[in-house]
Amino acid sequence: MAEHRVPGMAVAVTINGQAYFFNYGVAARETRVPVSETTLFELGSVSKTFTATLALYAQALGQLSLTDHPGKYMPQLAGSAIDKATLLHLGTYTAGGLPLQVPDAVTDEPSMVRYFQDWQPAAEPGTQRQYSNPSIGLFGYLASLALHRGFADVVETDLLPKLGLAHTYVRVPESAMANYAWGYDKENKPVRVTPGMFDVEAYGVKSTAADMIRYVQINIDASVAGSSLEEPVRQAVEGTHRGYFAVGAMVQGLGWEQYPYPVSLERLLEGNSEQIIFEPNPVKRLAATDSGPHLFDKTGSTNGFGAYVAFVLQRRIGVVLLANRSYPIADRVRAAAAILDVLE
Image 1 (cartoon, helix red, strand yellow):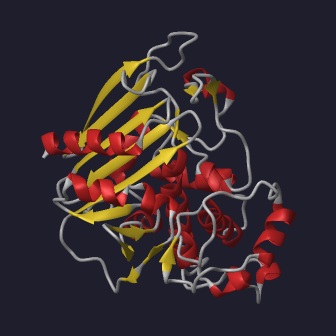
Image 2: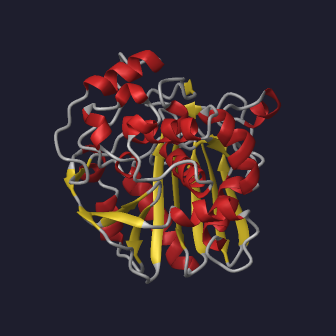
């Protein structure tokens, strides 16, 4: 925190179903309100794990299939280049070279449709991974069309309540605004995420350390007999644990990324490197994820917040790091790996 001028952090760990909380610093420099496990932080791209869970929930309900193509739900895209990709390709960033960010000119649904109608791939679907908000954004958007509801509505009124996450939001209600931390940008100015096309699908969820460690516990327990989740939701959560494409040091699933466990710090850092995040990388399609222990993780950033979540299903351990400043991903990985080593 001192090195990167992070005002506040909420850290949570879970060991065999028991959660522990460690809070540091302030939720806002101006008010000096201390961070707690009920402080709301922006999750950034950790939000993508909820998008993946929603899509798999729709599949469990029989409303979509990962082998479907976008044109099934958006006839405007039928026959276009993007329609050659499947929903699985969109959810794993392997559609063929969609960019990291939504272009500035794409500000609403009509301009989004035109963008995808005109888009031309740099590679065949399923041959390379290029981390992409438009890719996961369209994936979530299509899932909400399959469920015949707006994305934010179905997440907030259906998915999150079924997960038991009462203090996780796409749209923070007025009643929770007092708990919403301020993030701080590179100039140390207070900021919060601004609306944009696919913001809610790609990086728009806000949550607390208490809810996020519960979310980790839900993931750990999804494949255990006696899970408290409704069956379609349990299937959806468990479905996010399947790996589809080997990408360098890591395996890409839907939402979560994963590594055989135990995993070296070097491999974790390689899997979360700028090469993996910002560059296209060749992939190898996997018939199935091997059955051994795996570490699952996901980073997330907005202009003023930085998050990292990691857990090991078979060891029943996990860690959540939430901060109101976007500090280097490598340092998040190092901190979490050190914590997991102690929990182990």
